[in-house]
Image (tube, rainbow, N blue to C red; front, side, top):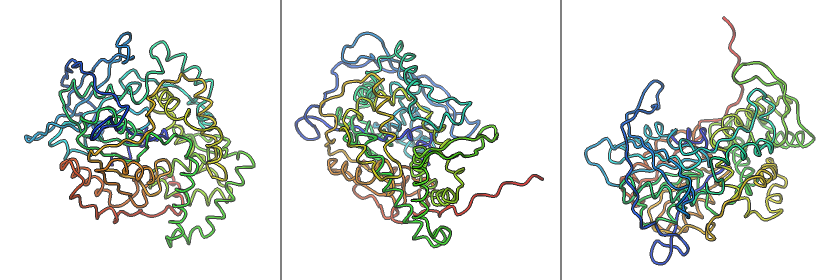
Amino acid sequence: MFIQRQFLLACALAFGTALFALAGGPGQEKGARQPSPTAPAPVKLEPCEVAGAREGVKEKVRCGTYEVFENRARKSGRKIALKIVVFPATGQDRAADPFFYIPGGPGSSATEDAPYIAQEFARIRERRDLVFLDQRGTGGSNPLNCVLFNPSSLQSYLGVYFPLEDVRKCREQLEPKADLKLYTTPIAMDDLDEVRAALGYERINIFGGSYGTRAAQVYLKRHPKHVRALVLHGVSPTGQFMPRDFPQHTERALNGVLDECAADEPCRAAFPNLRAETKAVLERLLRGAVEVAVKHPRTGVVARVELSRDLAGEAIRYMLYQSGAASRIPLFLHLAAQGDFTPLAEAAIFYRQQIVATGSNGMYLSVTCAEDLPRINPGEGERNAAHTFLGDYRLRQQRAACALWPRGEIPADYAEPTRADVPALIFTGQWDPVTPPVYGDMTAKHLTNSLHLVVPHGGHGFNGLDGLACIQNLIIDFINRGATKGLDTSCVSRIRRKGFLLKLAEPKKSP
């Protein structure tokens, strides 16, 4: 399903955000900016082909670029060409309001995800254009890409989250082509609104996932008149200052999964002492790193690496992001308690390679170093991390990286809740370690025409659950209606975990 791939591509950089609000009168909040009265030049889209969701298949769509000033306030100087891909509506009964997709990260490319989103939402596309805009700093829109690890060294992936020397080099490489203070979410959402107008759309529907939910809320806050309906998956309010709360949210999710194992007869029988084993694994890692033999995921060559408490905790956290991966946690902890840390170490390497090392990390830093880290009170994150499996490494290391990165300005009311009566459908996973249901509740409280649905057994994504057609059908029905009223949500309670992994697969024997 689209949400799962979106997460694996980039949103798992470990953020999660959104955009919404205004000023004075219904649907407006104090302090929000009004759209520029200047009419933008129309976008010229040309027929083009993009890679399809299936290998070897091409999609015939329309592509183009739209230039904006990097410095929107000054309206002069360098311009950025924003990449746009539009999957035109396929049916005759076409609606005027398109479906915009905002991915996670921050740092993901919307246009790279486009074929998969289009495949999942083919029924929405029957009536509506599907629009994919690479946010400034990502994909084909002046990407702020950084190289943070050494691909030839597996140990490189088991070190600091943001290696400081690599952060310095990345800044030096990017500054000639970008003012790194000008890649924040509010600026990007003003870009999006300008593109909306240039494409000729008056109102739009938005799907935001993870960080995309924050971006969507910011857009709603700044341009409320142009939003018809909103779908938020894995909600991050603008007042959630990441990574401050990662440790306790991860601890809550981990305990939830361990409780589910204890309630599942096969899992309980396979791992009867799981709580004690989890404690033993943490205690062992607190004494120091363990040496582990792992296979290189590409070459198959065995190498010896050191797995620290930080990276073991990170691996568990990322496994909790997806329900299917979380179903392996009891087995991996059981094996580690027996002295076999290989599965956990290989998971840590996989997530560093496939998540942390992907996407536009420079854009990630430009966003989080302006919007999140400065608002975390000294000592607050460390207190949150006390006595947790994850610990406080992420806050310490990200704070050090932000000390080296230019800090942009954001509006004074940025962290205030988004208040609007726009129809909004909100999904959170029961055991989401980064955007738990409490954030869905907080967001729904201020979106007065919203419906918040908690997906049983769900993580940040829902891969590995049975009954996911329910979620897709609800989104399609909601967009068609433009309202939460009348949605049949009974199928959500029937979503189930497929089970837990109880043993590793036997290696294939040579013929």
